Length: 106
Image (cartoon, rainbow, N blue to C red):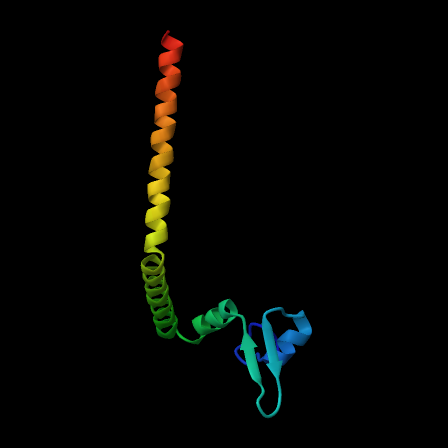
Protein backbone atom coordinates (compact mmCIF):
# COMPACT_ATOMS: atom_id res chain seq x y z
CA UNK A 1 0.00 0.00 0.00
CA UNK A 2 1.26 3.43 -0.89
CA UNK A 3 0.29 6.86 0.34
CA UNK A 4 -2.05 8.53 -2.13
CA UNK A 5 -3.80 5.31 -3.16
CA UNK A 6 -7.42 4.79 -2.19
CA UNK A 7 -6.49 1.68 -0.19
CA UNK A 8 -3.80 3.43 1.89
CA UNK A 9 -4.33 3.15 5.63
CA UNK A 10 -2.23 4.41 8.50
CA UNK A 11 -3.52 4.01 12.06
CA UNK A 12 -3.07 6.74 14.63
CA UNK A 13 -0.54 4.55 16.43
CA UNK A 14 1.43 3.99 13.21
CA UNK A 15 1.34 7.71 12.45
CA UNK A 16 2.66 8.57 15.93
CA UNK A 17 5.40 5.95 15.70
CA UNK A 18 6.57 6.87 12.20
CA UNK A 19 6.46 10.68 12.59
CA UNK A 20 7.10 11.20 16.33
CA UNK A 21 3.82 13.09 16.28
CA UNK A 22 3.20 15.77 18.88
CA UNK A 23 -0.36 16.55 19.94
CA UNK A 24 -1.65 13.07 19.21
CA UNK A 25 -1.93 10.15 21.63
CA UNK A 26 -3.23 6.66 21.03
CA UNK A 27 -3.67 3.92 23.62
CA UNK A 28 -4.89 0.36 23.14
CA UNK A 29 -7.10 -1.81 25.26
CA UNK A 30 -9.89 -1.10 27.66
CA UNK A 31 -10.32 2.61 28.22
CA UNK A 32 -7.99 3.32 25.32
CA UNK A 33 -8.59 5.58 22.41
CA UNK A 34 -7.09 8.26 20.27
CA UNK A 35 -6.79 11.78 21.60
CA UNK A 36 -5.62 14.80 19.64
CA UNK A 37 -4.98 18.48 20.10
CA UNK A 38 -8.16 20.35 19.16
CA UNK A 39 -6.61 21.78 15.98
CA UNK A 40 -5.61 18.30 14.82
CA UNK A 41 -9.10 17.02 15.63
CA UNK A 42 -10.70 19.87 13.65
CA UNK A 43 -8.46 19.15 10.67
CA UNK A 44 -9.47 15.49 10.85
CA UNK A 45 -13.13 16.53 10.87
CA UNK A 46 -12.51 18.42 7.66
CA UNK A 47 -11.48 15.20 5.90
CA UNK A 48 -14.71 13.36 6.76
CA UNK A 49 -17.11 15.42 4.67
CA UNK A 50 -17.54 18.99 3.49
CA UNK A 51 -20.93 19.25 5.19
CA UNK A 52 -19.56 17.99 8.51
CA UNK A 53 -16.64 20.42 8.22
CA UNK A 54 -18.99 23.33 7.63
CA UNK A 55 -21.15 22.37 10.62
CA UNK A 56 -18.10 22.04 12.90
CA UNK A 57 -16.81 25.47 11.87
CA UNK A 58 -20.25 27.06 12.28
CA UNK A 59 -20.60 25.64 15.79
CA UNK A 60 -17.08 26.74 16.68
CA UNK A 61 -17.74 30.31 15.52
CA UNK A 62 -21.00 30.46 17.48
CA UNK A 63 -19.22 29.22 20.60
CA UNK A 64 -16.46 31.82 20.23
CA UNK A 65 -19.02 34.60 19.71
CA UNK A 66 -20.86 33.50 22.87
CA UNK A 67 -17.61 33.37 24.84
CA UNK A 68 -16.63 36.87 23.70
CA UNK A 69 -20.04 38.27 24.62
CA UNK A 70 -19.85 36.62 28.03
CA UNK A 71 -16.31 37.94 28.56
CA UNK A 72 -17.38 41.48 27.66
CA UNK A 73 -20.33 41.32 30.07
CA UNK A 74 -18.14 39.90 32.85
CA UNK A 75 -15.46 42.56 32.39
CA UNK A 76 -17.69 45.51 31.54
CA UNK A 77 -16.85 47.40 34.77
CA UNK A 78 -13.10 46.98 34.26
CA UNK A 79 -13.32 47.98 30.61
CA UNK A 80 -15.24 51.13 31.57
CA UNK A 81 -12.57 51.99 34.17
CA UNK A 82 -9.85 51.47 31.56
CA UNK A 83 -11.71 53.69 29.10
CA UNK A 84 -12.20 56.43 31.72
CA UNK A 85 -8.51 56.27 32.67
CA UNK A 86 -7.46 56.47 29.02
CA UNK A 87 -9.66 59.54 28.50
CA UNK A 88 -8.20 61.12 31.64
CA UNK A 89 -4.65 60.50 30.42
CA UNK A 90 -5.55 61.86 26.99
CA UNK A 91 -6.97 65.05 28.53
CA UNK A 92 -3.84 65.43 30.66
CA UNK A 93 -1.62 65.00 27.60
CA UNK A 94 -3.62 67.61 25.68
CA UNK A 95 -3.33 70.04 28.60
CA UNK A 96 0.42 69.47 28.73
CA UNK A 97 0.73 70.09 24.98
CA UNK A 98 -1.28 73.32 25.26
CA UNK A 99 0.85 74.48 28.20
CA UNK A 100 4.04 73.70 26.30
CA UNK A 101 2.73 75.49 23.23
CA UNK A 102 1.82 78.61 25.25
CA UNK A 103 5.29 78.61 26.86
CA UNK A 104 6.92 78.41 23.43
CA UNK A 105 4.88 81.41 22.25
CA UNK A 106 6.08 83.60 25.13
